[in-house]
Each structure stands twice: as C-alpha cells, then as structure tokens.
Length: 455
Image (cartoon, rainbow, N blue to C red; front, top):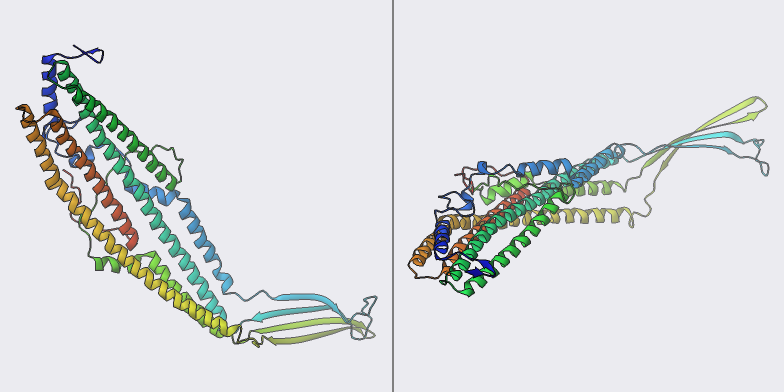
C-alpha cells in the first residue's frame, strides 16, 4: 500500500502503532520522554533538571553589572561630595591694585597715592545659615542614596520579569513539543489506518494541518523566548545574543504576610517612601533657611596700602564691615518664604500619594497572588486529574469504537493545554512576588509551604 508515494504499513502494522500510541496516551503512560506514573510536568523534582539559570544568580549579576545602578551610585557619591562645600564659608576675595594715581601718566606721585594697595574681604552668612545649608546637603545625599536603592529594586524586578518570562517560554515549548510528538504519532497512525483501508483521508489531512500549526506555534514561542533572553541580557549589560540557560524555578512561598504587615514593612524599608520623608524634611529645612534670608549677611575686610614720601615709605591699613540690605524683601525674601512653604506642602502631598499608591499596589498584588495560588491548586488538584481521567475514558471508548480517534487526540491535547496554562500561572505568581518585594523594599520570608512542592 502506497501513502503519498511511500509504502505504508499494513493492517498488522497499523494495529501495532495503535497499541503503542494507546500506551503513550494513557494517564500513566510515557509521553514524549516522561517516565511512567508522571502525572504532571509540575511534579518533576528541580534536582532532576539539568543545571540552569537561577533567580539568585540573576539578582547577583544585576548588582554587579547593571550600568543604571552604577550611574545611580555615582550620582549619590557626587551628592555626598557636595556636603563639605555647603558647610564652608564662601571663598574670601583678595584685591591687588594701586590707588589715587596721577593721570595721564598713572604715576604714584600724588600726596595720597598708594601703590600697592591690598584688600581682603570675607562674607560671613547670618548665624545658622551655614548649618541649615549643610543639613540640606546631607538630606540631598540621603535622597540620592534612596533613589539608588529604589532603582536597585526596580531593576531587580525587571530582571525577575524577564527571568519568569523565559521560564514560561521554556515550559511552553516543552509542552508544545510533547503535543507535536503526539500529533506526529497521530499522523503516522492516520496514514497507517488509511493505508489499511480502516481510516479516512480527512484524518490524514487534519493531522497534517495540526502538525504544521503546532510547529509554527513552537517557532513563535521560540522567538518570544529569544526576545525575553535579549531583554534579560540588556538588563545584565551583556550582548543581546549571549546564550541564556534554561531558568530553574525558585522556591515560591505559598504563604504571605497580611496586608497590614506588608504595608508596615513598606513604610520601614521601601526606599521610595524613605525618599519622600527626606523630601518633606528637606522642604522644612529650606523653609527655615528662607525665613533667615531676611537677616543681613556680614562682609568684613582689611586693607593695606603704602606710598613713598620724604620720610621714607608710609604704610596705611584699614578695616571694613559691610551688610546686605534687604530693601527688596517684599519681592525677594518674602516671596522665597512663600515658595518654600508651597514646596513643603507639595512634598507632604507627594508623600501621602506615595503611601496611598504603595498600599494600593500591595493590595492589588496580594489579590493577584491569591488568584494565581488558587488557580494553581485548582489545576493541580482538579483540572489536570480530571483531564487525565477524560483521556482514560476516551481511550476506553476508542478501544470499543464508541469515539473516533480525533476525540482521543483532542482529550490528550487538552491535558497539554492545561499544563501550558499551569506553567503560565506559576510564572505570573513569580512575577507578582518580585513586584511585591519591590513594593515593600525587602525580600519576602520563605514561609512553610512552597507554591510548587518538590516531589
């Protein structure tokens, strides 16, 4: 018997292929290299996996290689370098010249000529201004350090997003490859049965279409995997084409602290909120400094001059004291106070908004995590076992001719679809955990139970 120009198996060969495929399709059978008794792809022990990329290794690479974190650290160091200047008096002014020269020859032959004439001036701010300026500089440094710490959590979360996207893509490709293997097995069976006169040509054509469609889906998912790898390499400051090993699923805690506890932790450790509190404190300091601007700064100076005379060189000295006069206070110093008061109000409102947004984000992430946790448990305890039972039922019905072969294949492919969805839920849970850690500014405790327990 010829099938598409190639010799096909006879009736006995088709029966043998059917028997082998029936074993593969059974709930306890081996599917695409799985060991007998394997109930779900989620039950594989992490220790059995080949060494791959861990989330801890990604976080360490982020700390070591991220240029954004390096830039933020340098900016904080630059802010710290300005502290000493803020607490230091302005540079004194030194003047060298000649006074009361005769013109047009510019000679020091006048009775009151002085050549040379030396003058040294020093501005001294009103008491308290330097201390307030130094405090503002220290607060600016602390704010820059808080910004750097906040950026570290942000980049860390971005790396986790790419990591779990890679994990999801790899697991999807695994399940799709299993599905493609089943479809090719079905294609072989359909050709064999059609060649033996027991099948329909439409089954063969449908199998061809499904094989081509699944192959295209695998290629699409591989492209998504390559994109996720390129994003992770970008975050880690590596070439886009750097090979990225398969991610190893970390231990994801199934138990999380209460929302009030998480909000208290965020208030204590979230760098963004610490920065907001520093901004409020700095605004208050700037307002206090603006209130002192109405008081004049003092400039003190000394002067020395000499001239030649009949009795020899005559030397003269002088002392000067000057004050700034706030004659435009209504347009300058008072307006500065108004500006700083408005900036203090704005800083307080910004901090209140940050607290509200952090609290809302914590609540949103907890809802997402609860949803994912519930669905993962539902898929593992009910959906997948029932889908496997449906495969067993379809297999029994197929053996007695109650259902066609496409029904049997559809039942098994439904199991594979649910496994894909389960992997997507686990990846979503991991991403939400990374975002929650960023929201509170600290790592979550390991907890007593993991979302996916080792078997």
